[in-house]
Image (cartoon, rainbow, N blue to C red; front, side, top):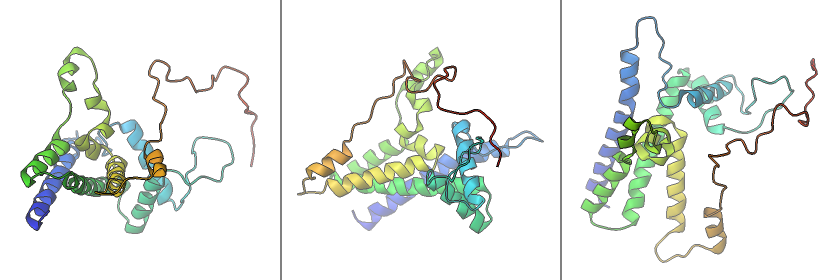
Length: 235
């Protein structure tokens, strides 16, 4: 890959990140008078939970704690990306939502450039690599054709399944894509076969989500077998 091809990939990446930010800027610009735009468009229920986790970092904590429980807790090192972003907001004085979108843009840039490096590993002429990159960056499925019939396809509600939608939605989706591609490039090097242990780690199976019984592993709150004492605990 020569310098000219690399510059082209960077320009497309910047265009992609700018395009992913336009909906937020437009929503902010056209908000009604007296209304407040939270800065979230895709899955705001989860989005606000991410901002809440960042808030814990803003308050100086590195451990995640459940806010809505009477139980004593020491916290756990979970959701470290969002907590770290909260620390960035604390150090810089920037608003949480600004840091969130800044991280989303940077993660989008990283994922896009890593994706182009991955495509170059597959070979092909520069023109073929560019077409593959554009398809990866801006394409999706045809599920939107079924949206008019009331069916909600994955194209419209599973951001992590599509590159542009991932960058539009959150920082951690494109970051995860970038890390997965880095792992693949590290293992699938020309002339090198992955070891059995590496192959087992990469292909570790996970249980498929059961849409017919989404709560099969959730305890019934109306049963008395839940090992929890609802008595008040002071202190």
